[in-house]
Every structure is written in structure tokens, then in C-alpha cells.
Length: 67
Figure 1 (tube, one colour):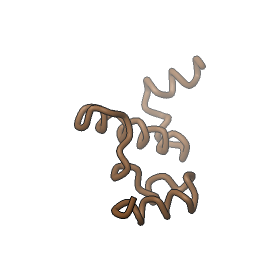
Figure 2 (tube, one colour):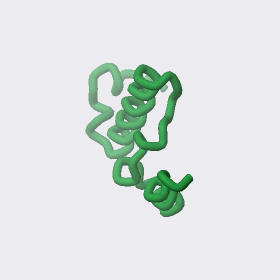
Figure 3 (cartoon, one colour):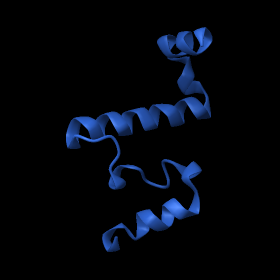
């Protein structure tokens, strides 16, 4: 925990793939809360930005107008 905190404080966490993913999620959620009043909006979590969500998320994202 101490090393993670130090890495975040110094900005080194963005050197790793996981760190970049966490930063993207943090920014996405933070912007959604400020702009829309809730943490995650369907349009803000694109499959390209979050490939770990898998093919089901791609289907939901592609068919969001029909949902």
C-alpha cells in the first residue's frame, strides 16, 4: 500500500498498463459524477478503453440505442 501510494504521488503508476487503465477509469468515473451526477454512464465506458469488460460489454455498447 505504501509503495502504491508513493507511485501515485510521484506519477510512476502511469508507466504500467494497469496504472493507465486505473487512471482512465478514475477519470471516466470522476467526469461522469461531475457532469451527470452519477458515477458511470453507458456512453462513457467504451469497449476500446476497457477491453477487460469483454464481448458482452461490446454488444451492450453497440446496441445501447435499442436498450
